[in-house]
Image (cartoon, rainbow, N blue to C red; front, side, top):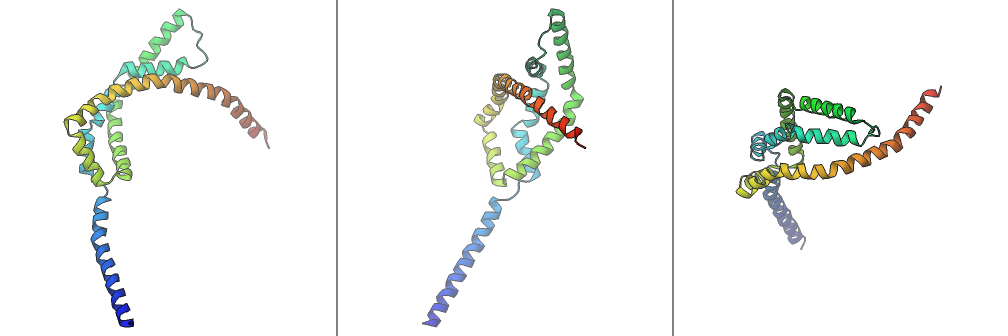
Length: 187
């Protein structure tokens, strides 16, 4: 009986070992870190750099974001001449923010950061699936529509976010200033 139990235990151990040996390569293949080449292909097929260039060169969007941000500030009591000058200043700095040399430097960083993040969150199989989907007609249609949808979405939420942030800042900053003043007066 003991011999039978030992044989059974050995057989079970051998079976588990064999199954583990078969499963482990499958798991490690599924969990493989994406290659740089596959991530570059994903970046290309999803038009990440082009989309970022379009967004960053969109003076209108940058201008609107800056206006929204500044309009939510408490110093909104400008006369007509000051308002005109205000708009000129916004346009000037919006153009400066979207200069080509600035954008090209950022593109390299965008690609590097995307690749680092993708390697943390996606495995090779997931990257391959995205490449496969976004290479289709439907995938490309979604990619092409995404910037316009995001622009519309951002235009709707930015005023809400900025107003909320400014209200909270007006509430918090005096308290923070008092705490900092108390800290600096401690000896």
